Image (cartoon, rainbow, N blue to C red; front, side, top):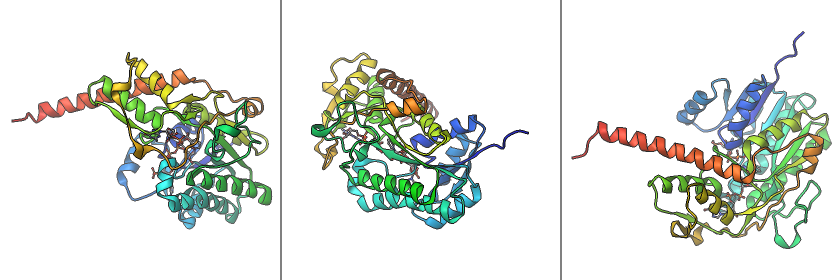
Length: 345
Ligand code: NAP
Ligand code: F7E
């Protein structure tokens, strides 16, 4: 007898991680459902074009009844909650929306599992974050943050995620739901949103290289982050839900680099050693409170799950720059075709 195909429900399918996780699960034979919000048919069309195998359900984390309906419709073996207001800078400007989405939204998902009688059958992944540690330089652990390190969030986003983390653990302890929290350090790649610093840099470097842009504006360059590749990290999410018991796991590379180092590496990829003529500094991009350094210790995930990241810092920067150069060239070609089709006066 063949085992039945598993079913997964993903919130945040339009985001970076959702875009890596959907094909990973599809390749493993899962039926994949994705929650899409809003009324944009364009977003829906784009998703269906890229992932024709995903069943889309219109719902919103802010609307509990819509999440209940999504759970009833998909009847998932695994529920990956990736949706959030995830941009730290944006969370300072929209703290209440961040609270409702990134904190209360987790509760809405857990309640949907409990209220529909699926506490024993649906495994839940919560997208927790290294931002919960706050990364203050003076009290950071020497080997990096691990699952037992103290939390000290430094933004409305970090505070909201901490609620999500604890309510997820509480539903594990109170109702016996298989809930695992991945405390993930920054992970990037070709699907990263352009509002995040790595993608902002690689896109600008590619466009400067192609003559499409003159410079870029950045905030602080000294903070350090532990940057990995998103493709490696979604594999870890899946591994957490296959483990024989629910738990919390840090996923990180164990290496931290400053924004300045990322910038230098990205410009080096296109043969520019001195980036100073191309980079402007903007006080408007500096946050009210900064996270100095995030360095993670992934020893538990490596030992318990056999998880290992494959892409290193240099490889990550390179793949993002090369991707953005290819994107820039497609843009140039499309533009020149448009000019031929519509010659100017
Ligand atoms: P992302 O690209 O910003 O995607 C966020 C997703 O959340 C989008 O699909 C967005 O949908 C959805 N969303 C926002 N508000 C929603 C709502 N009210 N209802 C339903 N969906 C909503 O984030 P990511 O980088 O893929 O990260 C995935 C998760 O991991 C997030 O929870 C993030 O906080 C967490 N995390 C990320 C990192 C990282 O380095 N990437 C590290 C640690 C933790 P729309 O397209 O409709 O806006
Ligand atoms: O900022 C500095 C900024 O927005 C990184 C999210 O996925 O990872 C991400 O949060 C650093 C900060 O990511 C600009 O001040 C300078 O020090 O790329 P970011 P983040 O804040 O680390 C964590 C783990 C998450 O969980 C989050 O969801 O770069 N920085 N200049 C800048 N940052 C941005 N965005 N834009 C700038 O122009």
